[in-house]
Length: 482
Image (tube, rainbow, N blue to C red; front, top):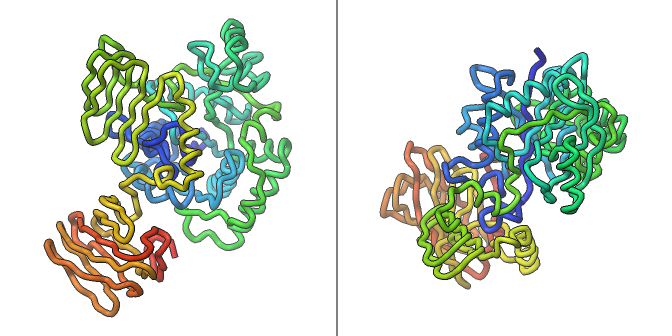
């Protein structure tokens, strides 16, 4: 049996799921009602497959993401009791280059016959047993002697216009050869696909050997093949000391075409097969998909959080911190977060991305960040933000250590409310306990560290003419951000 390495593609802003999904905290990190994120669920699903390669009792996975999402992704991987490699993109270049670099890494470490199971980080699968069966069928087609590039097709449940389709041809083993990939159809065309019986929704998940994928990429898209080969060559020539975190060189990667794996390879190769599946798959592409995960009441109202419905129907409420009451409304989506509220008609959820585009044009922070922001060392929450001052709640996990840094335009007051803070303040090193504080003038080098086994919680008061997050000069950093 060939080695199987799951490859998790994790990126994208998920703008249709604003205000919960944001550029700095995208869809893979959204928590569902059970408290697990989509990424954690994907890691758990991949790690539990019987054929996955493991070391020391932990499944080995490969995640393709960027440095901004690395630390959050690493935390989700640990929750899933798995381990693996992170391939960090300096810029986004779509799925074909991402998968190609993953194939180079897997081929270099495990050989060309090693199989890749390519999964999106933000899809939901409800029937893991049925998914496992489909993966076993894909492994048979992707392994020698078949050596096919396998995609997973979802048995359609209706004339869906929001997905691309795969048209199947003759049967091969436990799947079918692919005749064509077709774009998202209109309603009339989707109905003809459903009636034909040989069309499947395109899930965007794949299984193939690393060597065969790189061979077909070279045949179908030489430009992407050469560009990614140049990247891997430069990485190898520089000497890969740490196979846990691999950084793709930015200058070379920017030259690689921005193209999906469907366009670059799958639609052009003659060695493509599809395995049909019916395992409760959803790409969670809109708030409608989130709503459908919640049981309705007698009036088809649904709630995630706390809500009261009075003379309301067909309404979905998701509330994080406070109760939401609706009176005399229908056909609404109400998504309430600490710093942003979305109210949308149920028929217009795909247009939420327009809101995000407007926020970007206005340079409004809420398109990118929540009021609580994750950092490698913990989190910070903006409590108040006004001209001249900003108040934050800072939480540093055990062992967390902020960078040695300095600010040009602001001073800071730190007040410890829980735990123990080890502080570098200019030339002084001090330890602060609960109800103790320190003042850091503008221009002073400073650092905060939690050396004990409980969370450190403190209040930071910033004062100055400019309070932006980019007013940070880092001198040393445990997390490679200098």
